[in-house]
Image 1 (tube, rainbow, N blue to C red):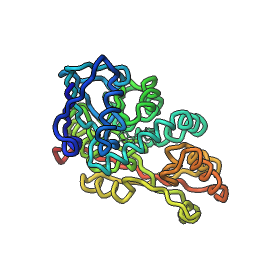
Image 2 (spheres, protein in one colour; image 1 turned 90 degrees about the horizontal axis):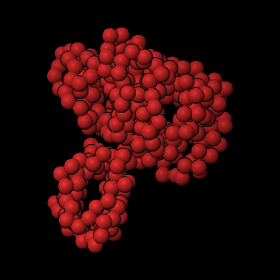
Image 3 (cartoon, rainbow, N blue to C red; image 1 turned 135 degrees about the vertical axis):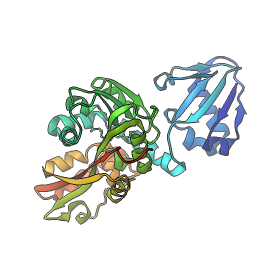
Length: 328
Ligand SMILES: C[S@@+](CC[C@H](N)C(=O)[O-])C[C@H]1O[C@@H](n2cnc3c(N)ncnc32)[C@H](O)[C@@H]1O
Protein backbone atom coordinates (compact mmCIF):
# COMPACT_ATOMS: atom_id res chain seq x y z
CA UNK A 1 0.00 0.00 0.00
CA UNK A 2 1.02 3.62 -0.43
CA UNK A 3 1.30 6.10 2.45
CA UNK A 4 1.57 9.79 1.56
CA UNK A 5 2.66 12.50 3.97
CA UNK A 6 1.91 16.19 4.11
CA UNK A 7 3.77 18.81 6.19
CA UNK A 8 6.55 17.94 8.71
CA UNK A 9 6.37 14.20 8.02
CA UNK A 10 6.94 14.81 4.29
CA UNK A 11 10.10 16.73 5.19
CA UNK A 12 11.31 13.84 7.38
CA UNK A 13 10.24 10.83 5.30
CA UNK A 14 9.61 12.15 1.80
CA UNK A 15 6.21 12.59 0.18
CA UNK A 16 5.41 8.91 -0.22
CA UNK A 17 6.44 5.47 1.00
CA UNK A 18 5.33 1.98 -0.06
CA UNK A 19 4.50 -0.64 2.55
CA UNK A 20 3.98 -4.24 1.53
CA UNK A 21 1.14 -6.00 3.32
CA UNK A 22 0.04 -9.54 2.67
CA UNK A 23 -3.45 -9.55 4.15
CA UNK A 24 -5.93 -7.10 5.63
CA UNK A 25 -4.45 -5.70 8.85
CA UNK A 26 -5.39 -3.00 11.38
CA UNK A 27 -4.13 0.45 10.37
CA UNK A 28 -2.39 0.66 13.76
CA UNK A 29 -0.16 -2.31 12.84
CA UNK A 30 0.93 -0.68 9.60
CA UNK A 31 1.81 2.54 11.43
CA UNK A 32 3.82 0.52 13.96
CA UNK A 33 5.76 -1.00 11.05
CA UNK A 34 6.41 2.46 9.62
CA UNK A 35 7.76 3.59 13.02
CA UNK A 36 10.11 0.56 13.12
CA UNK A 37 11.36 1.42 9.62
CA UNK A 38 11.65 5.16 10.29
CA UNK A 39 12.35 5.64 14.03
CA UNK A 40 13.07 9.36 13.36
CA UNK A 41 9.28 9.83 12.89
CA UNK A 42 8.29 8.07 16.12
CA UNK A 43 7.22 11.30 17.87
CA UNK A 44 4.97 12.41 15.04
CA UNK A 45 3.45 8.97 14.47
CA UNK A 46 2.86 8.15 18.12
CA UNK A 47 -0.65 9.54 18.04
CA UNK A 48 -2.91 9.16 15.04
CA UNK A 49 -5.51 11.51 16.46
CA UNK A 50 -3.05 14.26 15.50
CA UNK A 51 -3.82 13.63 11.83
CA UNK A 52 -6.68 13.88 9.44
CA UNK A 53 -6.39 10.58 7.61
CA UNK A 54 -7.74 9.89 4.18
CA UNK A 55 -8.07 6.28 3.02
CA UNK A 56 -8.56 5.89 -0.73
CA UNK A 57 -9.87 9.45 -0.92
CA UNK A 58 -12.27 9.21 2.00
CA UNK A 59 -11.66 11.10 5.22
CA UNK A 60 -11.74 8.75 8.22
CA UNK A 61 -13.60 9.73 11.37
CA UNK A 62 -11.23 10.05 14.36
CA UNK A 63 -13.36 7.66 16.41
CA UNK A 64 -13.01 4.97 13.71
CA UNK A 65 -9.21 4.93 13.60
CA UNK A 66 -8.74 2.07 16.05
CA UNK A 67 -11.05 -0.24 14.08
CA UNK A 68 -9.92 0.59 10.55
CA UNK A 69 -8.22 -2.23 8.61
CA UNK A 70 -6.17 -1.71 5.47
CA UNK A 71 -5.03 -3.93 2.59
CA UNK A 72 -2.45 -3.90 -0.17
CA UNK A 73 -3.28 -1.38 -2.89
CA UNK A 74 -4.84 1.10 -0.43
CA UNK A 75 -3.68 4.73 -0.49
CA UNK A 76 -3.43 6.45 2.85
CA UNK A 77 -2.75 10.18 3.26
CA UNK A 78 -1.72 11.63 6.64
CA UNK A 79 -2.53 15.33 6.95
CA UNK A 80 -1.50 17.11 10.19
CA UNK A 81 -4.60 18.17 12.14
CA UNK A 82 -2.61 19.82 14.90
CA UNK A 83 -1.19 23.23 14.21
CA UNK A 84 2.35 24.33 15.00
CA UNK A 85 5.87 23.08 14.47
CA UNK A 86 7.69 20.22 16.21
CA UNK A 87 7.94 21.81 19.65
CA UNK A 88 4.35 23.06 19.72
CA UNK A 89 2.99 19.72 18.53
CA UNK A 90 5.03 17.90 21.17
CA UNK A 91 3.61 20.13 23.93
CA UNK A 92 0.09 19.54 22.60
CA UNK A 93 0.70 15.79 22.62
CA UNK A 94 1.76 15.90 26.29
CA UNK A 95 -1.27 18.04 27.20
CA UNK A 96 -3.63 15.73 25.34
CA UNK A 97 -2.22 12.65 27.13
CA UNK A 98 -2.49 14.37 30.49
CA UNK A 99 -6.12 15.31 30.00
CA UNK A 100 -6.89 11.84 28.64
CA UNK A 101 -5.89 10.49 32.05
CA UNK A 102 -7.68 13.26 33.96
CA UNK A 103 -11.38 12.72 33.16
CA UNK A 104 -12.46 11.09 36.41
CA UNK A 105 -10.44 13.32 38.78
CA UNK A 106 -11.57 16.36 36.78
CA UNK A 107 -15.19 15.28 37.15
CA UNK A 108 -14.73 14.61 40.90
CA UNK A 109 -13.11 18.01 41.40
CA UNK A 110 -15.88 19.79 39.50
CA UNK A 111 -18.60 17.88 41.39
CA UNK A 112 -17.01 18.90 44.71
CA UNK A 113 -16.28 22.60 43.96
CA UNK A 114 -18.12 23.59 40.75
CA UNK A 115 -15.09 25.75 40.04
CA UNK A 116 -14.91 25.65 36.24
CA UNK A 117 -18.68 26.23 36.24
CA UNK A 118 -18.14 29.42 38.27
CA UNK A 119 -15.55 30.61 35.75
CA UNK A 120 -17.99 29.83 32.95
CA UNK A 121 -20.69 31.88 34.70
CA UNK A 122 -18.34 34.88 34.62
CA UNK A 123 -17.92 34.39 30.87
CA UNK A 124 -21.69 34.13 30.46
CA UNK A 125 -22.04 37.65 31.87
CA UNK A 126 -19.93 38.92 28.94
CA UNK A 127 -22.01 37.22 26.28
CA UNK A 128 -25.24 38.57 24.88
CA UNK A 129 -28.38 36.67 26.02
CA UNK A 130 -29.54 36.45 22.40
CA UNK A 131 -26.65 34.30 21.11
CA UNK A 132 -27.74 31.11 19.42
CA UNK A 133 -24.49 29.29 18.55
CA UNK A 134 -21.46 29.10 20.84
CA UNK A 135 -18.18 27.35 20.11
CA UNK A 136 -16.59 25.97 23.29
CA UNK A 137 -12.87 25.59 22.51
CA UNK A 138 -11.12 23.12 24.84
CA UNK A 139 -14.57 22.14 26.11
CA UNK A 140 -13.16 19.46 28.45
CA UNK A 141 -15.98 17.43 30.00
CA UNK A 142 -18.64 19.89 28.78
CA UNK A 143 -19.03 21.99 31.93
CA UNK A 144 -20.54 24.79 29.77
CA UNK A 145 -23.59 22.62 29.09
CA UNK A 146 -24.66 23.10 32.71
CA UNK A 147 -24.18 26.88 32.58
CA UNK A 148 -25.83 28.00 29.33
CA UNK A 149 -29.33 26.68 28.71
CA UNK A 150 -30.47 28.61 25.62
CA UNK A 151 -27.81 28.46 22.91
CA UNK A 152 -26.55 25.46 20.98
CA UNK A 153 -23.05 24.66 22.17
CA UNK A 154 -20.56 22.95 19.91
CA UNK A 155 -17.38 21.78 21.64
CA UNK A 156 -13.93 20.95 20.37
CA UNK A 157 -11.15 19.43 22.48
CA UNK A 158 -7.77 17.85 21.82
CA UNK A 159 -8.37 15.02 24.30
CA UNK A 160 -10.56 12.18 22.98
CA UNK A 161 -11.32 11.03 26.55
CA UNK A 162 -12.56 14.47 27.62
CA UNK A 163 -14.63 14.60 24.40
CA UNK A 164 -16.27 11.27 25.25
CA UNK A 165 -17.60 12.80 28.50
CA UNK A 166 -18.53 16.16 26.91
CA UNK A 167 -20.71 14.41 24.31
CA UNK A 168 -23.23 13.71 27.09
CA UNK A 169 -23.54 17.44 27.88
CA UNK A 170 -23.06 19.43 24.66
CA UNK A 171 -24.90 19.49 21.36
CA UNK A 172 -21.97 18.25 19.31
CA UNK A 173 -18.31 17.72 20.15
CA UNK A 174 -15.30 17.22 17.90
CA UNK A 175 -11.79 16.05 18.62
CA UNK A 176 -9.38 18.71 17.37
CA UNK A 177 -6.91 21.49 17.99
CA UNK A 178 -8.07 24.94 19.03
CA UNK A 179 -5.42 26.49 16.79
CA UNK A 180 -6.86 24.92 13.66
CA UNK A 181 -10.64 25.07 13.78
CA UNK A 182 -12.52 22.96 11.24
CA UNK A 183 -15.30 25.53 10.76
CA UNK A 184 -16.15 28.12 8.14
CA UNK A 185 -15.64 31.84 8.76
CA UNK A 186 -18.49 33.42 10.73
CA UNK A 187 -20.13 30.13 11.83
CA UNK A 188 -20.76 31.13 15.51
CA UNK A 189 -22.18 34.04 17.49
CA UNK A 190 -19.51 33.61 20.17
CA UNK A 191 -16.48 31.46 20.97
CA UNK A 192 -15.17 30.75 24.45
CA UNK A 193 -11.98 29.40 26.01
CA UNK A 194 -12.71 28.44 29.62
CA UNK A 195 -9.41 27.72 31.41
CA UNK A 196 -7.80 26.67 28.13
CA UNK A 197 -5.88 29.41 26.34
CA UNK A 198 -2.79 29.13 28.59
CA UNK A 199 -2.47 25.45 27.60
CA UNK A 200 -2.17 26.19 23.89
CA UNK A 201 1.48 26.93 23.00
CA UNK A 202 0.43 28.93 19.91
CA UNK A 203 -2.40 30.61 21.82
CA UNK A 204 -2.22 33.69 19.56
CA UNK A 205 -3.18 31.54 16.59
CA UNK A 206 -6.02 30.01 18.60
CA UNK A 207 -7.46 33.45 19.41
CA UNK A 208 -7.09 34.51 15.76
CA UNK A 209 -8.84 31.31 14.64
CA UNK A 210 -11.67 31.86 17.12
CA UNK A 211 -12.17 35.39 15.75
CA UNK A 212 -12.29 33.97 12.24
CA UNK A 213 -15.11 31.55 13.07
CA UNK A 214 -17.32 34.09 14.89
CA UNK A 215 -19.66 36.38 12.96
CA UNK A 216 -19.02 40.12 12.61
CA UNK A 217 -19.88 41.77 15.94
CA UNK A 218 -19.47 38.33 17.55
CA UNK A 219 -17.53 37.82 20.79
CA UNK A 220 -14.55 35.78 21.92
CA UNK A 221 -14.37 35.37 25.69
CA UNK A 222 -11.93 33.39 27.80
CA UNK A 223 -10.62 32.83 31.30
CA UNK A 224 -6.94 32.31 32.14
CA UNK A 225 -4.88 31.50 35.19
CA UNK A 226 -3.02 34.31 36.94
CA UNK A 227 -1.90 32.63 40.16
CA UNK A 228 -2.40 31.70 43.76
CA UNK A 229 -1.70 34.45 46.30
CA UNK A 230 -1.65 35.11 50.03
CA UNK A 231 -1.53 38.81 50.94
CA UNK A 232 -0.48 39.60 47.36
CA UNK A 233 2.49 37.13 47.42
CA UNK A 234 2.70 34.17 45.05
CA UNK A 235 2.18 31.01 47.09
CA UNK A 236 3.40 28.36 44.65
CA UNK A 237 6.70 30.20 44.09
CA UNK A 238 7.16 30.61 47.83
CA UNK A 239 7.11 26.81 48.10
CA UNK A 240 9.93 26.68 45.55
CA UNK A 241 7.61 25.43 42.80
CA UNK A 242 6.51 26.80 39.43
CA UNK A 243 3.23 26.29 37.58
CA UNK A 244 4.47 26.07 33.98
CA UNK A 245 2.13 27.32 31.27
CA UNK A 246 2.79 26.94 27.53
CA UNK A 247 1.08 30.33 26.88
CA UNK A 248 1.31 32.38 30.06
CA UNK A 249 -0.74 35.34 31.22
CA UNK A 250 1.41 38.15 29.71
CA UNK A 251 1.23 36.56 26.26
CA UNK A 252 -2.56 36.11 26.54
CA UNK A 253 -2.94 39.78 27.47
CA UNK A 254 -0.60 40.88 24.65
CA UNK A 255 -2.77 39.13 22.03
CA UNK A 256 -6.01 40.41 23.58
CA UNK A 257 -4.59 43.98 23.43
CA UNK A 258 -3.63 43.47 19.81
CA UNK A 259 -7.35 42.91 19.06
CA UNK A 260 -8.46 45.80 21.28
CA UNK A 261 -10.03 43.43 23.79
CA UNK A 262 -10.43 43.88 27.52
CA UNK A 263 -8.79 41.90 30.36
CA UNK A 264 -10.09 41.93 33.93
CA UNK A 265 -9.27 39.99 37.08
CA UNK A 266 -11.50 37.65 39.06
CA UNK A 267 -10.51 36.46 42.52
CA UNK A 268 -11.80 33.36 44.29
CA UNK A 269 -11.10 32.66 47.92
CA UNK A 270 -9.99 29.02 48.15
CA UNK A 271 -8.90 26.59 50.85
CA UNK A 272 -5.80 24.45 51.21
CA UNK A 273 -7.93 21.38 50.47
CA UNK A 274 -9.16 22.98 47.23
CA UNK A 275 -5.59 23.63 46.05
CA UNK A 276 -4.41 20.14 46.94
CA UNK A 277 -7.42 18.64 45.12
CA UNK A 278 -6.74 20.92 42.13
CA UNK A 279 -3.17 19.64 41.84
CA UNK A 280 -4.33 16.05 42.30
CA UNK A 281 -5.78 16.24 38.79
CA UNK A 282 -2.99 14.58 36.71
CA UNK A 283 -3.02 17.37 34.09
CA UNK A 284 -2.57 20.05 36.76
CA UNK A 285 0.23 18.28 38.66
CA UNK A 286 2.03 17.97 35.32
CA UNK A 287 2.31 21.78 35.29
CA UNK A 288 4.31 21.54 38.56
CA UNK A 289 6.33 18.41 37.84
CA UNK A 290 6.59 17.77 34.10
CA UNK A 291 8.15 14.55 32.80
CA UNK A 292 7.26 12.62 35.96
CA UNK A 293 4.96 9.60 36.20
CA UNK A 294 1.41 10.70 37.17
CA UNK A 295 1.22 8.81 40.50
CA UNK A 296 4.62 10.10 41.55
CA UNK A 297 3.94 13.72 40.67
CA UNK A 298 0.51 13.74 42.35
CA UNK A 299 2.06 12.33 45.51
CA UNK A 300 4.85 14.92 45.34
CA UNK A 301 2.37 17.75 44.73
CA UNK A 302 0.27 16.71 47.74
CA UNK A 303 3.42 16.46 49.86
CA UNK A 304 4.86 19.83 48.80
CA UNK A 305 1.50 21.53 49.14
CA UNK A 306 1.03 20.43 52.75
CA UNK A 307 2.48 23.75 53.95
CA UNK A 308 -0.09 25.91 52.22
CA UNK A 309 -1.93 28.64 54.12
CA UNK A 310 -5.51 27.77 55.13
CA UNK A 311 -7.03 30.37 52.78
CA UNK A 312 -5.67 31.87 49.55
CA UNK A 313 -6.73 34.05 46.65
CA UNK A 314 -6.97 32.12 43.41
CA UNK A 315 -6.67 34.85 40.80
CA UNK A 316 -7.87 34.41 37.22
CA UNK A 317 -8.12 36.74 34.27
CA UNK A 318 -11.11 37.08 31.97
CA UNK A 319 -10.74 38.51 28.48
CA UNK A 320 -13.32 39.59 26.00
CA UNK A 321 -12.83 40.62 22.38
CA UNK A 322 -15.58 41.96 20.11
CA UNK A 323 -15.18 41.34 16.41
CA UNK A 324 -16.13 44.84 15.39
CA UNK A 325 -13.25 46.81 13.96
CA UNK A 326 -11.34 44.26 12.01
CA UNK A 327 -11.58 41.30 9.66
CA UNK A 328 -9.52 38.16 10.12
C1 LIG B 1 -8.64 22.94 32.31
S1 LIG B 1 -9.52 22.09 31.09
C2 LIG B 1 -10.94 23.15 30.88
C3 LIG B 1 -12.10 22.39 30.28
C4 LIG B 1 -13.40 23.16 30.11
N1 LIG B 1 -13.25 24.33 29.30
C5 LIG B 1 -14.01 23.49 31.45
O1 LIG B 1 -14.35 24.65 31.64
O2 LIG B 1 -14.16 22.60 32.28
C6 LIG B 1 -8.60 22.40 29.62
C7 LIG B 1 -9.08 21.63 28.38
O3 LIG B 1 -8.44 22.17 27.23
C8 LIG B 1 -8.14 21.11 26.34
N2 LIG B 1 -7.06 21.54 25.43
C9 LIG B 1 -5.77 21.78 25.74
N3 LIG B 1 -5.09 22.17 24.62
C10 LIG B 1 -5.99 22.19 23.61
C11 LIG B 1 -5.90 22.50 22.22
N4 LIG B 1 -4.75 22.84 21.65
N5 LIG B 1 -7.03 22.41 21.47
C12 LIG B 1 -8.21 22.02 22.03
N6 LIG B 1 -8.33 21.71 23.34
C13 LIG B 1 -7.25 21.80 24.12
C14 LIG B 1 -7.76 19.97 27.27
O4 LIG B 1 -7.82 18.72 26.64
C15 LIG B 1 -8.78 20.14 28.40
O5 LIG B 1 -9.93 19.40 28.16
